[in-house]
Amino acid sequence: MQRRFMVWGAVLAMLSVGIGAFGAHMLESVLSEHYMQVYETGVQYHMVHALGLMIIALVAGQWGESRRLRWAGNLIILGIILFSGSLYVLSISGIKVLGAITPLGGVAFIAGWICLAVEAFSRKP
Image (cartoon, rainbow, N blue to C red; front, side):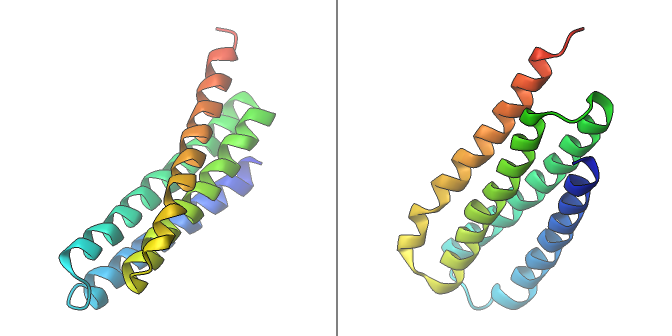
């Protein structure tokens, strides 16, 4: 689990940089200011949660694997796909119905962080 989440985190962080650079260099002149902000929000949450996934991997190395940490990591990955992915597609395509998917990604992020917090709280000092 530790290795898998570290690899996923690193790959997702790399994709965040690439997607961000693509937006900054290729889309800035194409997208409206509003959709550029939507795109940048996707990139920001993508990177923050990729780093969070690497933190979960490091925590798993320190504390050992657990069901909650596995859930935390998987929910963060799902959140990146749903939240950031929907914002990328929405900003490029303008299909507003995709905005309905974004909150599902946000819920996945929140649930992932809750899993990490509950795991930390349940640890013996």
